[in-house]
Length: 359
View 1: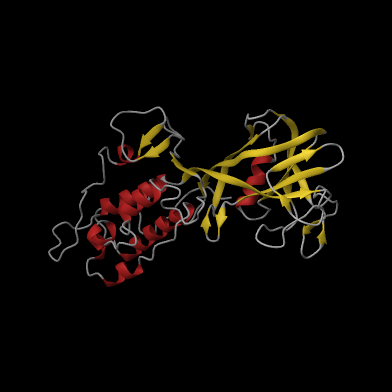
View 2: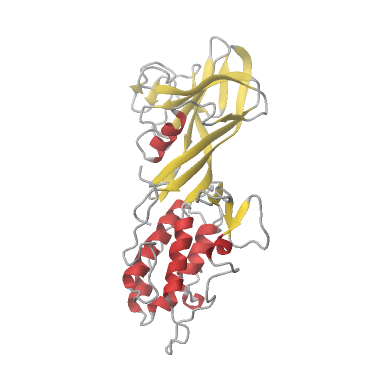
């Protein structure tokens, strides 16, 4: 996986447009592509800038900063608003495409190896913070963009300049590392008592004879939207159970679905009648252990991360992000005892950074 190293076409050795050089349509196209790449990360539709770029005689001002041209359908059409309102300040459920909101939490992190590394990026800070860094504090030391209002007009009294292009490039380069919290949905169960029909998800039981296991899924991608083209830096799964027990988490290796042809105790594709190599989904080629066995306490989150998940933990999630392995997982109880164990909550916290190119 490549590290982030953007290459702008019209740029000096620092990736910036020289103030003595003409900036043109190609520069704007590259910024539009970088904005849309990040809109996809926060589960939004990309915006088609072509119409605005094509038809205006003074496109630079309109596309960089002129809210009067923004349609009601998306008031963050211009570049500056898009970077702040639609990317940096994106909120699940308000801006994201998918409902229920996925991810459930979004945070951009400062990516440079300095005193602010991995602090949450916000727009502006009036005073230093131990947990946040202001984008504009680092960009130009003011509360906003250079020349806050660039208005397109026939007389060009406030033209777009190289500094405006360069600030957008720099802001987008810094918005490359994120920490998303993704829900894990435990929707389907496997039950020995009804081996040929799907069972209720989010329930575990094992009394030495009968058993129910849970199948869950995490969705870092929703079609073209989501975490494509990223490098996993850290991954942490948190699962809370209703009762003390001993659990094991496995990654499913079979091609299963929660949309149709649901898995059962006997079959990984129930309607098609394709059997697990071992009923219950824990045989060779069915699934493999990614964590456990481990004891858990009632109501206390089990946290699995790089510290206790072993050397294969982060590569497992990179493989899921790259769509080279399954986003489906299996939980089972290993200690024999009476009673049901509910999965009360489950989530994946993923810290990532964009690869490159493009920007």
